[in-house]
Length: 410
Image 1 (cartoon, rainbow, N blue to C red):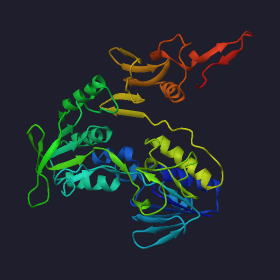
Image 2 (cartoon, helix red, strand yellow; image 1 turned 180 degrees about the vertical axis):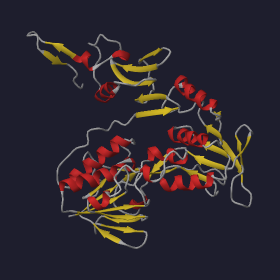
Image 3 (cartoon, rainbow, N blue to C red; image 1 turned 90 degrees about the vertical axis):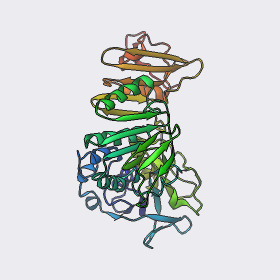
């Protein structure tokens, strides 16, 4: 049996480890555009010079050799032929497979603003090759403009501030981290970043750029006429799934690669896991999807049962925040909040069930909340307020005095 895995991120590595465990004698071939396994979550540490390239890896240095995996690095899969069960690489190499996993992740989105896609000093931040270019260019760039204040944008801002750069963050919304936090929690981080020298421009967008003959943008104009001068631009305005290798073939794609509960695509023996399938774009879910796909690739029927991916944890300048759910209240929802000197909490309940919760401050013992949201556990019979729940609140005693567990999914 020959297993080909395209991508060496969380999903691909998880799948490779699982396949090797289930099929010790199988051939495993991994293809990746990068030449090093790395955690995307740590790229900002590389930009800030807090980590070197080697310390970005989340596998042992001898991972591929120990597991007997053929790793084709600096290679890109450009076409898949489901009928021939083959993958064509950019160097002309053709790989035949019995089972294929597409774990190619996602690409940064560069908005269609004049010069933004052509300029030599505009970068997305998605993988190590991006980070290498940014780090090299930043050596001679002092004024950094970051487009977008999501997690990637704020990670980049933090990294450049650590390098004593002049950082400006431009955000289309009226607050930072708009998809993760409410105005109050976002303002707490904005204040911390401003104390370290970061400038924020909110509720504005770029409409024009100036690029002289050196092919580098040196200023942008905002929709209110403001001119911002810059030496480099990092775009953190979202991502798109890396489905390029599925073009002109039978694999069903509707923005994301379509998969069933076994992570199998519309084509037999071809699977997809991680950001490319759009189920849940967070690290733990990608690992679980890789594991699920691998089990099925090895003939062990396994369903993926964790589609919940609305989770974000962040820590900037010692302030930790956990956000679970989309944080959007509908008509009829109950919105609760609590604040003291060390913590801010906000919860949304719908029909007696927790939909979202945000905790800014200590987040110990918060695993319960993800379980409650994911499984939609009714809180009607629970007397403790939502901000002080523990697993003990779901234990009771029956008529014989025996403990009973009442946390059942509904």
